[in-house]
View 1: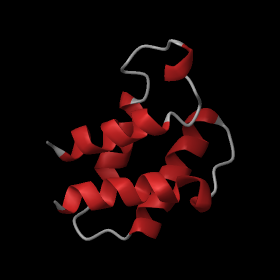
View 2: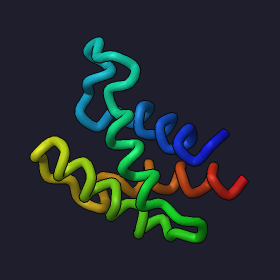
View 3: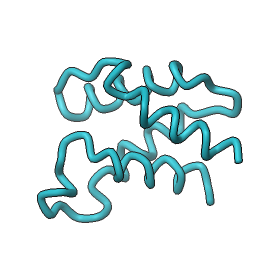
View 4: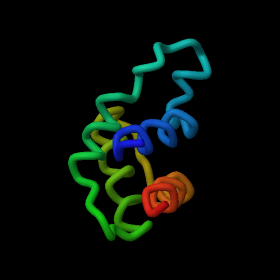
Length: 83
């Protein structure tokens, strides 16, 4: 799996705006996943990635996202990327 595939898989599973759950197209979060991939680097901490997730989703959806909101998804991405 590519880094994008891992990120997309976990972002889609998280579905932070509940768009996929309500029938949005499967590519709904692809732009955000690409934005996150562009800022992702090997060795990134879970907290660092959670900050990136919070920033990307806050900017894209004009919603408030805390690092705590994003920590679980960031951890899943980091853990799978290390495999």
